Length: 362
Image (cartoon, rainbow, N blue to C red; front, side):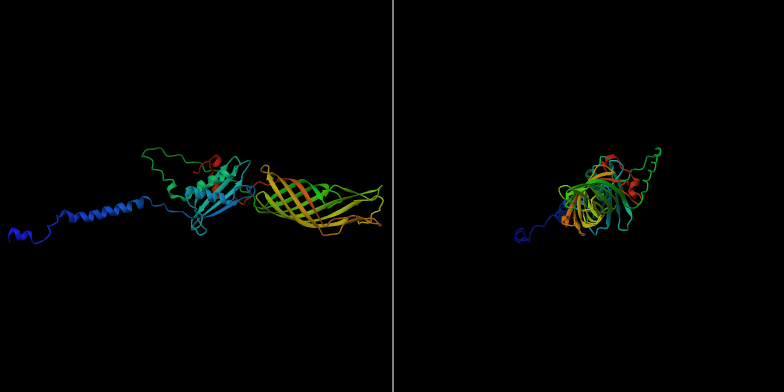
């Protein structure tokens, strides 16, 4: 075939052999370019945990679980608390001696074994600071990126590291309720012919969320005119049973009061029995402020529904008849005779005391 016929056949020129091996290389480079950013921006694995947060008696003023959970979410960037998580975190806040506030934390795996523990102490009675540091410690426990790496092995010939002495265990505390006594002043309103001041003495067994108590009250005599020349005096003494519930500084009680209404009548003009039975029921609501570890002040108000009829009368007329409703207002100094918290034994995490003020987890 001539040169002219060969050029007119329309056959494409032969491609170089190097282009055949270049196509797979381009595809691999493109795949690497697409996948690399995804790997670099991949979010770290999220941890989930069940949270059991408790405040022992004496630590009712500490923040609720909401603050701990919010701070954990802020530290991690997401809320790690889930009711069906395989891990479980138990946290306890309790008051120590003086102005110390303590917190113990344990993380359990799905088999119920403790995998992490911490004990934090705040020496300035600042429970909020303690809870914030608890969130920081739990973040370290849950975020694998913050876990401490194992220490490298010492070089050959290096002296052995001295072993730390085991810390002393916290003494066991007796299990049971706290014992409290109260001394106060009160005023009876609508129970006697006039507003009468009084004194009260109380005692109670206090549990974490409720208490059982007794209170005795005596009110000063209230004078009542029989006629222009004669005056009678009437005074009241009661004993009240008080089951109460409490939430931080607020408390509410149900009162059942049994007592006697006595009178002074030297001339025996009054026909009212002496003494007269007094029976009343009603609610109590109040606020408690803690002064120190063992002392607190309570302010309360009561409503009394009288169940027994009471009146002061002569043979000629009724001088006074007690109202069906009345009340009390009182101020009480409460003394806690037991140390808080009262627990059967020291928590496991107490064996690892933290640095003062719980500034940072270890």
